[in-house]
Length: 388
Image (cartoon, helix red, strand yellow):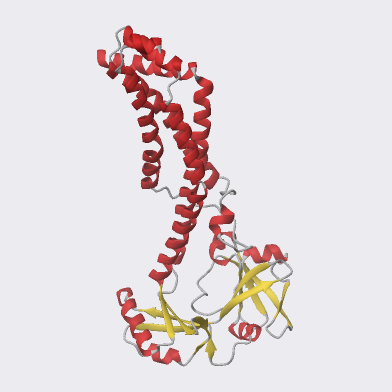
């Protein structure tokens, strides 16, 4: 009980010491909080966005087969489908027709895709999917920038610079924005005419496999039998997304590395450069009977209160910035180049490992550089410390 009272008294004294030097400590808290908010925002946003994308890609095709010519993606002959369909374990083979369309009127890139069994399960549609030529369904981003609604007409220029008109019959709602925001869905005949895709050719081929464990084997068989193709497994797409977001978050963290270094210098200077007043205070405490362990505990509580308060405040600010405000400071860099990238509410995915790592990278070093110079002053003769 006496020990508890003793520790609480030291903590009270530490808090009073912080308030006595409140201007100096406030500057540390402000810088510390801003730095923590920036770093936590990057970690929260990257991890949550990656988890969102990975969750949606879980329903992506198990295997996509592209033809490669000169190291670049090229149209693939539909005859390849019969070869792939003959492999054991393949349950379905579907040709896909898609491409990118740049709209000069809005300076936006659209993803145009032909409807088939591989995309008809997108759902989340207001209206219906295209069922005949001259109809289209739009992502909400396309509908917003083109000011279109169900019943209105979308005009696009085909590969021969001819104007083509499509009646809007459906609009994907905001719940599917990550997948459909920049999407224009047409019938297969319409997209073939729009992009002038020759008869008997497709953009790529989707392969459905009975047993997911057999996907690598079937991908290898396709590559061996059709050497000019590039099989892409869903696991490879997921790995690419994880690498992409890891690279972008690393780039953002590198941009703020200078801030981290500046704070480290500030914290080290503050902690190691004890002022004359602080050294005199330590000497007086030693003179009135405080033990070295008591002084180290006092400085420990001072460092912990300052660093932990700043850390928690900065983490909360980062959380609010990402999950309530939509991370306006980070979105342009981490989301990518698309003009029509969706604005949506991220589901809070918190990685405890990241929080613990951030805690040990910021809080623990600050406490350490606070205690070390205090220990050096505490082991000296009190009279020498007081006299300076």
